[in-house]
Length: 491
Ligand code: GLN
Image (cartoon, rainbow, N blue to C red):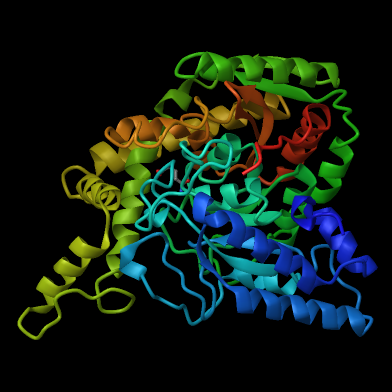
């Protein structure tokens, strides 16, 4: 049998549906691959061997009973450790939730199980999804399969690296400011942030509730679209879930694969051209624009004057919401409790628990957010940032009157060496310069590999209007048909 770990999700599903391989064989091949490489990659925080094999067996039994299987039945998937999994550890990359086994599944995980996918385990991430490199994980970083001395992006570096290292064909991430797209870009994989509210946040450990969006990671655009379709759609348990079906992203990806973009208008944001990005990244971006033009697309320069304020606005809004969301980790209800020896007051135990359980970046954000929300400063900081958010949304709305989608490099720089940005939080924040505006607006964005710079992957970001997720899949699939899928050096 050919190596199933090299196959796309579409190929794996076909193999199982035809009976050429059982779901158990496919699951075992991926578990073996994890056992062979994950000591070097560290994409996983927890591998659920028994759960995966049991799920695979159930798929094989359903097939044997003649049941019609869905398009992803038997396909292995890795899940970012930000989503609750019933009975399976969920840490959010933090000591404060070490050992916590949630009593329930998140909606995304529930839908993954219903689709017959096989959950391999939980992937590494920056603590509470705050970061761009996985260096802020309390359990040690993930290593980029392209170069093990470099970061795999973050916060969802584990999910992206698991895919790039052929440990799983599919993974789930969450994107608050770029945490699906940026790891996708620097690992040469595809990562999509759906429209906010297009995928459920029920059971997603909250960082910034008005921005958090779970979404798919894959090696191909079609695989990402299939995963998106499987997890998306209305969820009555999430009050911000959109009560409408997800647009047909799978059909859009398949249409785009023909490589015809005739009549599609792509907007290049003038405020994003140049400043802050590495020359090699800009060169790959320009090559991608040439390719897209050859496929029939029309390039239009558009101005989004408020995008330059996106980063500061985000770093007020996200910490403000996190300072409120993370108040629940008090040593009483979940996970860690420190110093509860009968000699300390409740306040002392809470304070000691939070001091021990949270890492430095999480503490920095809680302090920033608490300050920004405090009386006397609320209007000047949080209130002002919300006004900027409105202006950014207006920029998007105006741009989408002229063009179908916006395009930019996904990240200003390729995967950077460990330790090179941890000394200065601002340098780390810059990794999301191009991805954050989309989160503030609420629209969808995808990163698709567009080439290499210095031997490392570069991603093209495609941003679409809210609930027009299909548009970005079409353009991404067209680019992929011309550029091809990137293959990292053998591990
Ligand atoms: N890197 C950004 C941050 O640190 C975005 C993280 C994310 O999307 N979860 O907040």
